[in-house]
Image 1: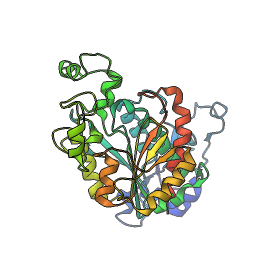
Image 2 (image 1 turned 60 degrees about the vertical axis):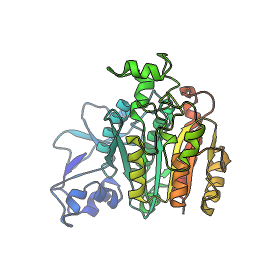
Image 3 (image 1 turned 90 degrees about the vertical axis):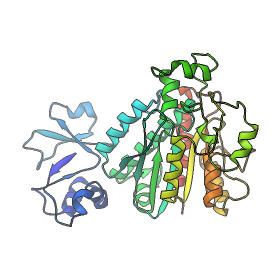
Length: 378
């Protein structure tokens, strides 16, 4: 929310009044504070919303409290966000993601949201950035279309982190501001928006015939993993791509497994590769489904930290740590090969994709350990 600053003498007084770390206020108002240290006439206050006075305190269980100074004239009450605004336990479509990104951007303006590229159908691929530390960590979800549950889980984890920051609290036992100060967290919650929409909403107008052909004539797209060009985005990276190309079936665009005619041919993959090269991440994590295990090595090129992190991730989640499998051309494979830094493919849940929402709570509780451990990696 935005407030007038006329009743406050300093940024420190505002910080004390709202019980917020000063740096979160500064980072929520970079357009003002980048120009100097003078307190502007109005600023954003993260983690708060103004609500009409008709809301009764007992209805909100104490989450709304009266403010005697700045807000009294407007007969408004102040609501501090202490519970999640995002519900990931649903068919998490690109439309839901866009709505949730807008909610988070408004409530937590120190978290930036930007477009890093577009999909085959021109839909935006978004990145969230949180934190100001030197260590750069990246997490993504929904490389594969029918693995959309990973996007909901990841967005709920982000929401929990933002709530912990503005409430001076911990994130499931870990001190949140310490992570904010030491880590710059990059999140791409939905790498394949076209594919996710296809699985959840069906084919877009004008593309029905082509997509049905690639889906062997079936109108059931629940098994679809690819983008809308029929290319498997996690078989597209230049890490022994030729091996995957030679042995993969089918040999033409399809619902799954086709690696394309060349690496990095798809706009979604090109956007991810560009992001990684420009950002120089220290670690990447890709959320997939299913298996309740994760892969952390590639060709013996993974650094020593990878094995240590794998042990931590396994302990915190209960997932089995697997060093490597007979697979190439994945995002994690390419990152390890190209940069020699820790990379992980996490297989959420267990069963048949799409993983049923009945598993959501279990998955969230398992994966939050990996999320927190990654943020607190030193």
